[in-house]
Image (tube, rainbow, N blue to C red; front, top):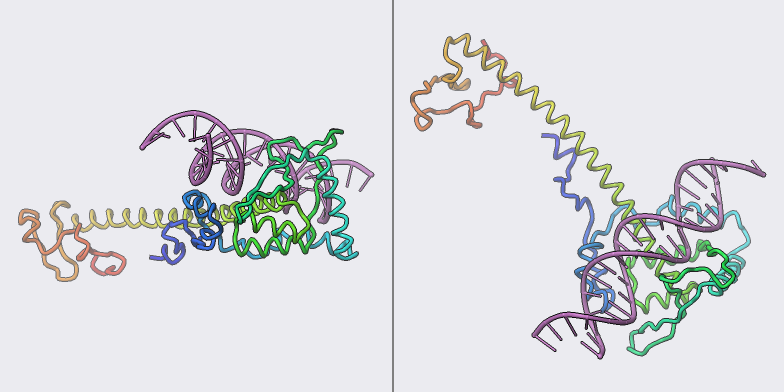
Amino acid sequence: MGFDDVCNTGLGLGLGCLVKQEQFSQSDHQQKKKKLFLKHDHFFPSLTLGPSDDIYQSATKIDASKAHGESIDLHQQTSSLSAVSSFSNSSVKRERDFGGEEVELERVSSRVSDEDEEGSPRKKLRLSKEQSAILEDSFKEHSTLNPKQKQLLAEQLNLRPRQVEVWFQNRRARTKLKQTEVDCELLKKCCETLTEENKRLQKELQELKSLKLTASYCMQLPAATLTMCPSCERVASGGEGPSTSPFTIGQKSHFFNPFTHPSAAC
DNA sequence: ATAATCGTGCAGGTTACTTCA
DNA sequence: CCTGAAGTAACCTGCACGATT
């Protein structure tokens, strides 16, 4: 009935999530991790990949309020970043670039405390509107980064690769959270629809039961043998067996619908 | 061929900071 | 000015996987 029209999901909570092929052609490493993506990251939510107003609202407001231009903003962030670097206990790790040669990249180890020698708490920069926009564009292209893309983005944005990496991780998490909320809302609606459908069917069942009792009483026949077809008005007794009976109550094709045949009642 | 080890990246969760109503 | 909520950068932990030994 209307359920599919309302829900139109088939409860298949792919729910508008499409497999994004691009994700599987990011890099050799990511191709190798295809299984992992299939498990975790093969949905590409339709609602959250565009620049989400609520997500970027604050950043926009910040920049609008600053009104000093990007250069100042970037400069502030640069100094902020250098401050971060100074206390980040930056362990130098080696990341392979695509030529196979190893490039030394300053990298904040995620397993190392982010306090510097003085024990000052971690600083937190705010990405500028421009930086956010570029990151967002990149995320639209591919929600994961290979090392070279990460490095290029970091250079372009004057950020550390680690910061780009973290931004993408957080962005994926936000996307997933949004999608989960959407899915949850959809499930709620489906649940409500199913509940109503269930109520309606229960009610219909009750009416059918009472109708059946009334009909059997009027015809003075045992309820078990009542097999009259309302359309052809032929009556078959229960003793004739299902093979010879043109219909039974249980047979859907001849099932009497009291709602479409109200005049057939006694 | 197989197991152990290492490096890396990710998801999920948390913390700490910023901004704003 | 104070405060709580929301947003988010940065971090931690555990896991999976591939490469190397």
